[in-house]
Length: 267
Image (cartoon, rainbow, N blue to C red; front, top):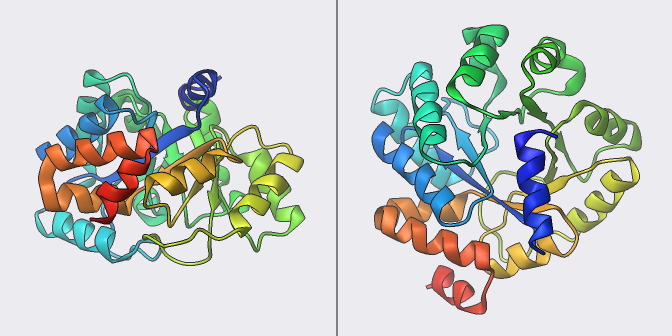
C-alpha cells in the first residue's frame, strides 16, 4: 500500500472520506507556499496536491491561473518544486502528490524528475494532460521508484478507457466531476456519482472527485459515494485573501464539512 493509499484508508477507518487539498507551489512566494502546504496538513488535509506553475494551464480556472502566473513572474524554477516538497515532508507526515502538466516533466527528463521527487520525499504525480498509453516512460519510472501515478477519468470516458485508467493508476483515480476547467460551482454534476460507480465496477480501489468542489456541503456530498474530495480554488482564494490564517480556517471547515463552513466560505 502506498502512502497515498494508506492516507485514504486511514480516513476511511475514521469514518470519513479523504480530503485532498491543492495549492500552487511558489505562490505568493516559495517560502509562503511551503508554509501554506504545512498549514493544510496541520489543519486536517489527508493528502497535499502541489501544483508547479505552468505557462499554459489549460485545466485551471482563473483563480489558480492568476496564482500560478504570479509565481512564474516571481521567478519560480522547477528545482524550487523539489525544495518545497522536501521542506513540507520534513515538517509533516502527509503524502505530497505533484499535479503537473506533462511538458515540464519531459523537459526536465522523466527519470530525473521521478528520482528528484522521490529524493525530496514526494509521493507521486497527478498528470492531467497525458494518457496512460502515452505515458510509458512515466509508468516505468513510477514502477521503479514506487511513486504513485494518478490518471484522470472523465464522464465521457468509454468503458475501454476506464479499464486502462484504472489498471494504470495507483494511489487513486482522479475523477473529473464535470467537463471543463477547475473552479467553484454551485452544484456538482451528478455525472460524478455515476462515474465513480463506473470506476468501482471497473475495479478502482480509490476514486477521488475533483473540479468544482468549493464548500463543506459539497465535500460531504462527495464523501457519500467517493473515497475522497479534492479542493483547489477555494483554498487558493483563502490564501490570497487572508493568508495562512484564513487558509487554516477554510481547511478546517472543509475537512469538517459543517454547515458553519458553508456559511464561512460563502461570505
